[in-house]
Amino acid sequence: MDMKHIIIIGGGTAGWMTANLMAHQWIKLGFKISLIESTKIGTVGVGEGSTPFLKEFFQTLNIPEQKWMPACNATYKCGIRFPDWTVDKQQNSYFHPFYSDIDGELAKNFFNQCNIKRAGAAAFTNPDDYFVTSALANNHKAPKYIEQSDENLTYGYHFDAELLGVFLKQHALSLGVNHVNDSVVNTIVDKHGNIAILQTQQHGAIRGDFFVDCSGFKGLLIQEVLGESLISCKNHLFNDSAVAIQTPYEHLDSMPCETVSKALKYGWVWHIPLMNRMGNGYVYSSDYVSKEQAESELRALLGEQAKGQAARHLHWRPGRLQQHWKKNCVAIGLSQGFLEPLEAPMLYIVQRSIEEFIELYQSGHFTNTHQQKFNDKINNIIDGTRDYLQAHYKINARQDTQYWIDNRNNSAISPVLDELLQGWQNKENFDQIIHQNMPHLAYLKTSWYCLFSGKGYFKDNIKNQIPDAKLIAENNLAKTLCSQKSAVFYDHWQYLNSHFPRNSVLPSKEAL
Image 1 (cartoon, helix red, strand yellow):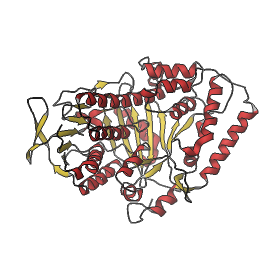
Image 2: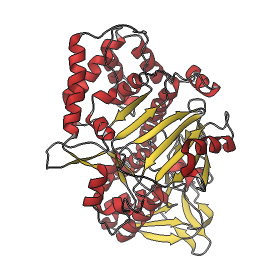
Image 3: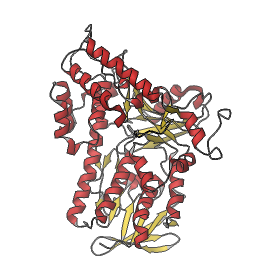
Image 4: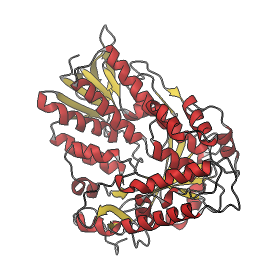
């Protein structure tokens, strides 16, 4: 397949991530890469958190943090805190860490304690006690050593999504990407059903060899032209709406380094700390609450800081395509589907989709068979992500609304998720179950252990039991070591202000 002229439809984070990775690989080989977008059409622009894989994206492009993070008001993300998903007053919150080699034996102790409790004995199973990134989050530390160390720490980022799109656009243009500010008004396909020409409003006909659909929810090419339709997963994931409100900082003595995903009556709220503001949003199901009620509930939670702040409402159909790559077009981003923002998985899916496509072409494997393998792999990632997200809702312990009760009683779960849930509860060898289902999982062992233990998903009620002395000692040692290890890391606010240019976008504490 000839791909000398690749045309990307749509900008935003997905479009410009695609443009950057493709240009990095192929412009030097004589490829022409064009991105067509209409600046009159806005982007969604509210996804403000990442998984650790975004670090690899910038490393591939040789863009240092000191260059892109200040431009995007970015901060570090050590993990995600989940308050109020359970009714356990002793443990109504837990932290989902990013596992690193530094955790080592501490993580093994955590797994051991969980399996002891699964077997019916008392143990200490709060993941907060066993992972260094949890200690960093508790103490508002950056995942950066004060002195040079050979140990690498895994972390993600928080950022302004619109500013990230602007930054990526500028970098893509510097790589030689051709930017066309225009609207596509018609699409012409050839006799084989492949896309041949895009008719634009101001630039006329633009011919390409291969097309990337980053046009958002409407899927201008993959859905409207090539007829690929969305496969709904609303029966798995109820949430289909969100309302976002940005709030200013009033008093800021230190900078958090965690995303907070707090359960509310009909969904959950994110709190994401950027350098200049806090990003907040309520993700909910429109089947249970109206957009007006959701906004009111969010404003009540945010209090005085939300007064006078604009609210942005979003709605989507949770689901995915069956064929992300069809004919001479591949869909990337919202055009290929969307699940929901919990655990910030969608940017990872965008990145993996681009990287898998580039790797496939580089290997010379570009037949229909390999096209199907690509689609199967991306669907596997999305379905595995769907299972992990649904598990949060399936094992919730809230009783306050029908929304949470219905999520807990929902029987529409995949065989993989069912096997994981049953295996954990029935005291089977959970590591073996994880291993057997590895081809279908998007999240690995640590994440599943943290999810199940953090939400208190244990079958036996072990009240009035005292763990044995060895387990007590292990838990105390873990907490002590995590605290000691976290002491050699920078304060988050201090690091951002001392290592990033002050003349960029970083405000002073006094200005905040």
